[in-house]
Image (cartoon, rainbow, N blue to C red; front, side, top):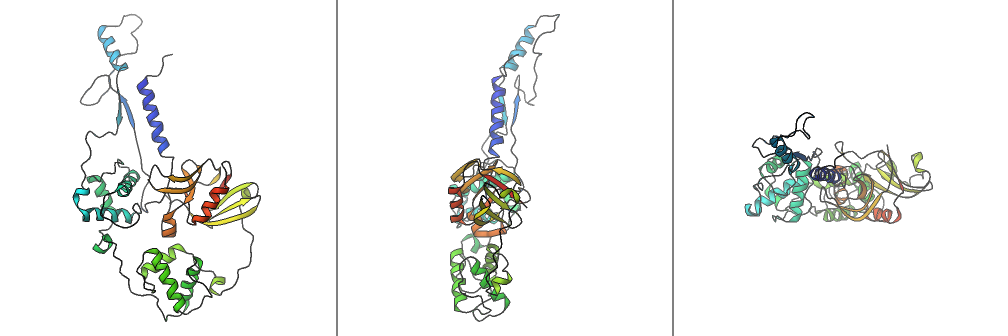
Length: 387
C-alpha cells in the first residue's frame, strides 16, 4: 500500500477546517437571509494548461512492456503536482465603497447593513473594524467571499435587499411621529400600554385606564433607554419597540390581580438531574435541578432557515466571552450544546425582542439571569429543547 500524497492530505485538512468553521458559533440573524455556502475544491494538475484540465500517466506500466521515458516523465509530473485551492482570487476585488468614497457613502453602507441587523449602534461614516466585520458577516451569509471589502457584487446584493436610507437615518436624527397615545388619553389602549411597561419594569403601581403623569414618566424613561425621542407620548416607533419587547398582557395583569400559582409544566425529560429545559412553545428556558425550577427566562430561537435543533443534548463547552468566528458577533455566557448552537446572552434580543431571530442559538435577553445560569451549569449537564 502506498502512502497518501502530501498534497491530498493538505487538501483534506483544509476541507476539515472549512467544515469546522460552519459549526463554531451563531448570533443575530438577517431577517431575509438564506444559509451561506462555502466550497473548497482541490485539484491536481500534472502539467499547467490554459483550460485547467488534468492529465496523468498510468501509475505503473503494463505487465508485458517496460515504462517508456515519456510515461516516466508523465508519472513524475503527476506525483509532484501542487494542489490548487478554489476559490482564490487572482487579484483583490475592487472596492466600490471604501474610506475614499466619502463619509456619506459609508453612512449609507452602515445603515443598509443596519436594516438587515448586521450593523449595530450609531451611524458614524467611519469605515472601522465594526463595519468591516458586518460586511464579512453579510457576505458569508449570502455565499459571497467574506473579504470585508464592498466590491460590486456585494454592493448590488446589499442594495437589492434594503431601502434607500434618508438623510435623517444616515445621521442618527430621530424625529417623533404623530402621537398615538398621550397625556389625557383613556381606555383599553392605555391599560395595555401600562401593563406592558410594567412587564419590563418601567411602570409601577396599579394599571388604570388613564394616561397621567406616572405614565408620561414611564414612557419617557423607556424612550430614553432605547434612543427614541423623549416626548412622553407614544408614537408608532415607541409602540413598535415596546410591543416587540413584551407580550400581550393577561386578564390578571390588566385587572391588577395576583395570578394563581401554577406548577411549571416541564417536559418529562427535565424532571431528574441537572437540566436546562427549553420550551419552544412558551419561549422560555428553565434551569431545573431534580425537578425543581431554580430560574426561568425568556428565549428566542433560530428562523425557519436556521432552526434551533430539538432533542436531548448536553453542555459540551462553556465560553464566557465568546465571539462568533462566522458572524463576528458577541455571544456572552455561551453554553454550547449541539455543534455551533449555544445558549447565550443576545444584545439584539434585548433591544429588538422577537422582531429578530438567531442563527440557531438559544438567545437570552436577561443578562443577569444568563450570567447566573452560566456560573451554575456544568459541562455534561443535560439540555432538552422541546415543543
